[in-house]
Image (cartoon, rainbow over all chains, first blue to last red; front, side, top):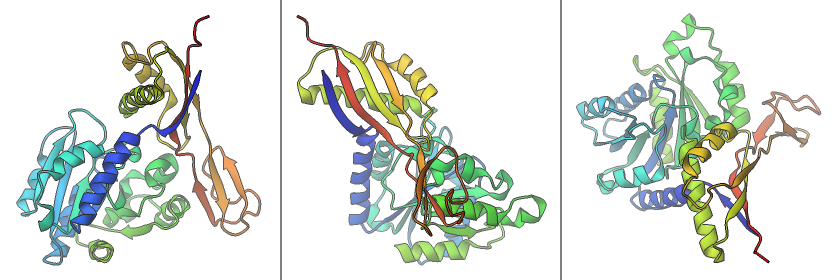
Length: 213
Length: 118
């Protein structure tokens, strides 16, 4: 006997993600899932964005890490509300972890909620967290071939932020090549070039996010 | 190794489907689709299945995995073609206005149960 199921394998996660999205939208929060390799500059990008945002929006952060609270401490130093999720070895966040973290945040007091996913270009791709915007962060030192090598994470994302652009002259990274590859996978995607440490490019990202809110 | 989480979700999904269909028979086959761009590795999925299936409803079942390809769609000439690897130009007209679509499937398509006894 055959049972035809035709169900998404991650349906349970997708349903929880839809609930998260509903809760966030109802509270007027724009939720941004930030994915990228370890060391791509996700936390530094957030620090740069917060200094640009100033009083224009009230941010909060959910930090996803396999272990430790180093990133959460960096956010706390900036006075940004933060909830740390430790996945205890898991290579990605899922919607249930985010649902639990949302319970620890005052959504009414937040405009922009950033979820800094576990540093990983593979496993984070399949798990919808309930975000409205997904940003892939890629640094110039990682190489311009990553969209071709890790298409799943780039496909259908809302933006690619190329970080560490102040190092462009010291690498063979070609922004035109990665941008062309990226736009084949995400035709509607935005591309930003940023040097968060020196404050270049972050105002454009902040402006885009404020416009999306 | 997100394949472990995916197999956990698979086993829960099979459990729900059997429940819904009111079936208690032994599961002999599972048919899945894992798109080539899904970021899920079939080999790792099989390994995770070996680890997690014993003692569950899918113990001893055979897992068949179809791997649908992504397609390249040309925004100039409209040609669409399944592709083995990411391409930068339309295979038909050579335009570089192409979009890579699909290949992200991650589904449980069907469950085969042991036939009823005589």
